[in-house]
Length: 126
Image 1 (cartoon, one colour):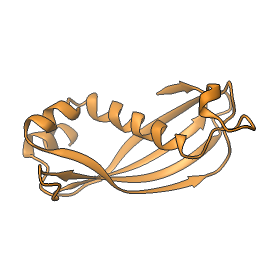
Image 2: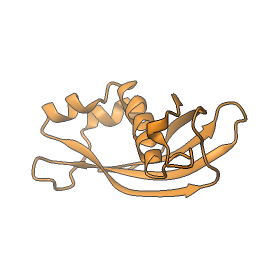
Image 3: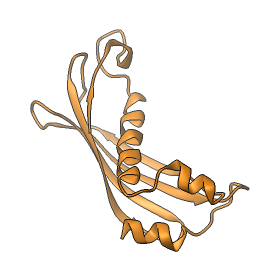
Image 4: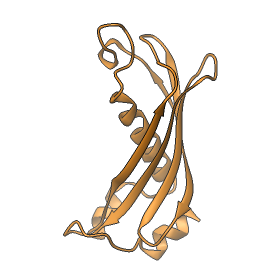
C-alpha cells in the first residue's frame, strides 16, 4: 500500500519520525488480513482479538516530507495462536528499502489470554 509523507509524519528536520513506521506496518497488516476476510469485526464477534506480541525493526534509510512510500506484509508462518509477518517499507520512486520488520501477532481471548486461531480463520490464511 502507498502512503504520502505529510508534515505531521515528520520531525523538525522533515524526516519521518521513527515511531510512525509502526503505523505504516500496521496499516499493511490490516490490509493483508482484511483482504482475506479477517478484519477486526469477525474476530470480535467470536470474542477474540489479535495483538502485536513482538516487533523487530531495522531502520535502513529515512523517508522525508513529500515522499511516497510503500509498505507490505507477508505471512511467513502460522502456529496455533500466532501469525509471523515479514514486512518492509520502501521508497516508491527508488525502490530503496527504508525499513525491514518482523512482527508477530497473537490471538487472544476476552481475558487477554493466548488462544488458538479458529480453524475457519486459519483456512483463510492458508
